[in-house]
Length: 221
Image (cartoon, rainbow, N blue to C red; front, side, top):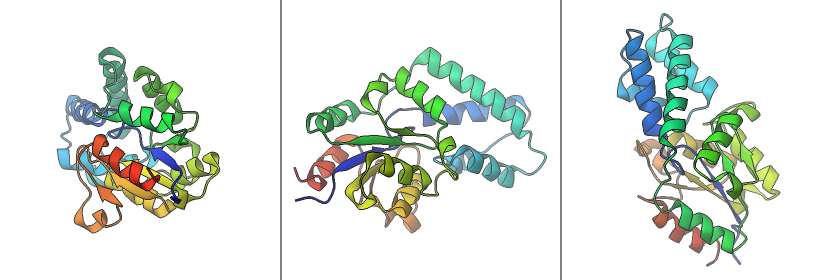
């Protein structure tokens, strides 16, 4: 009998195609304020919790960077686009969720996004009814790459970490899931894990359809 019994999903970049939009909004917001943020700097923030990403940005841009103004403008533009354009789903997601639901496999969401915004994104993507357990980055002491969101999600599922599979798109998320004791399958979005951390992954695959095949094996069929 398989030791794995549940699946914990990241949100942005893994289930919904929002990381690209966030990147564009941050670059646009900074540019309006007279600052240029490199794409590399933005990519380094992918997967981090809000507190951690704000500090990392200040560390990279310097203390004179108008973080509060850029953040507020970027968030407003980001929400405008999500609400106006809708939230796109990653290929293979619906099939994977249907497959898990058909086998009564427990699922949860563990995201760096604040809980209220995560719930709005799930609603916009018509995924809200798919998950009864959603843990946001503002509901735990530390965001990713700390393991807190995954530990909280696993606790709510009422299983042990070793019984849960994590699905992630970023290196930051991979580090968080691994630190929490979950086997992690990575489906890269904007940036694959670096060689330093890719060894932490159970597997790195190109799509959620590939991930589903691995999940099926790990769950015992």
